[in-house]
Length: 257
Image 1: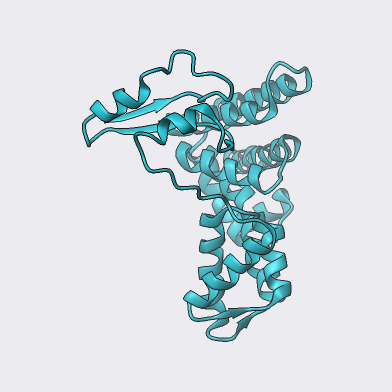
Image 2: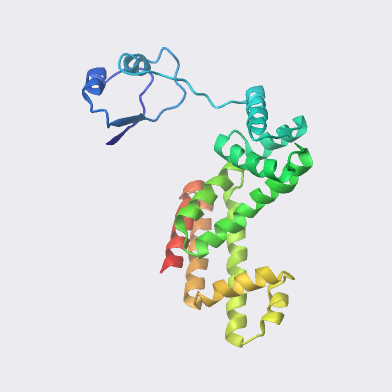
């Protein structure tokens, strides 16, 4: 059984007296989770829990510690990495150790035993980060809510703001509308690229496949929801990150219907 508690609080133990005895009486199958910011050793709740549990501090590495973590992780994968590449990794990915490990795994395979250089990071990691926005929008339209929200979170971690995400959703909806119009008019696929403003046959094929699954009513509904999210942010009715999560959920739910 999993139990989640709110913030422990830094000043007083109001309502928490006897917690150590309650924890001691819990069955071994109970997983009790507290969510809070960084706590000093003098925090009364932390001191109380110390009587009933083992406490291990696992701070996320930063600065030189993060650089050493990256170097060690690469060496464990049988490769090496230059100092400039380490700097690029921390700039692009930040301190998310799970994401860093995934990117380092790809870089190690790509380098094939050679040292990972800054050019490798710029080529592989930056492309993957930029590709996340297109994958997120596609996930929204294709009804993949969990994937859309996960990619949206990653975009936020990468520093992408709501106006940028809204502009990319609008771009894809515009392509979807143009492709739907081409289908309705019976325009040959070889001519659709010029209508969409792209020379990529992959983009043409993928957009046509999406457009065949969506009616004009669906596309217009999506435009309306996008406009509402944009206005909610600009008028201060919704915090940008929340507005984006609601938009992603709405778009994805429509994609499943």
